[in-house]
Amino acid sequence: MATATRLTDAQVRDELAKLPGWTLAAGRLRREFVFRDFVEAFGFMARAALVAERMNHHPDWSNVYRKVVVELSTHDVGGLSQADFVLAAEMDQLAGGGRG
Amino acid sequence: MATATRLTDAQVRDELAKLPGWTLAAGRLRREFVFRDFVEAFGFMARAALVAERMNHHPDWSNVYRKVVVELSTHDVGGLSQADFVLAAEMDQLAGGGRG
Image 1 (cartoon, rainbow over the protein chains, first blue to last red):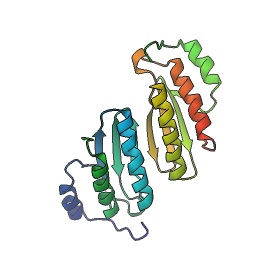
Image 2 (cartoon, rainbow over the protein chains, first blue to last red):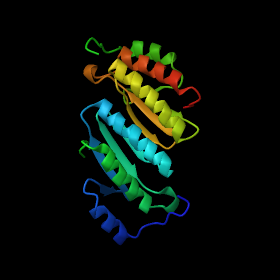
Image 3 (tube, rainbow over the protein chains, first blue to last red):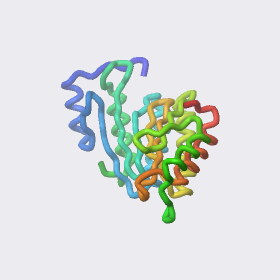
Image 4 (cartoon, rainbow over the protein chains, first blue to last red):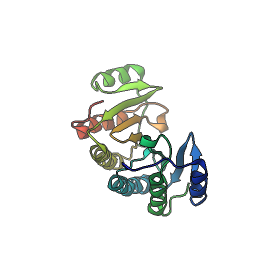
């Protein structure tokens, strides 16, 4: 993410409008996914981990049984970049049945 | 973990003495693992997830890049059970190079 640039508030608003499950929390993009059980939750994390590594853009996330809370931001720009929204959208795809 | 029983404070102290990397935090067993990078950190989580699922005893945990924070407790007994210490010891094994 060497070329990441910080999105403006207006850009963040526009991007956020496309991702209904996500909210802003302390300047970070946040979503809670709830799955059927731990196997489904961790299966999601494993898939998302591969995408994150491929993008070289990694989530802050936590897991308690069937729940996964994801927070995204771009450290290098001190805010949100396009990569956060790309990863968020990928996670939505990967979550399939996971509802937030 | 149907037969889990809550360990006494003395039992917890004894068990804790065998696990140098772990501390008590708000009644839970806590350790922070630090790995070389995200691949190592998530590799640890994947291995630990399989063990947790096999034990039917799941961690509360979070991951930020190369760091994994684990908190263990046994909901059913409102405290710590033997399973928490078994899982903690297994995680230490799995972590290999991970230092906390």
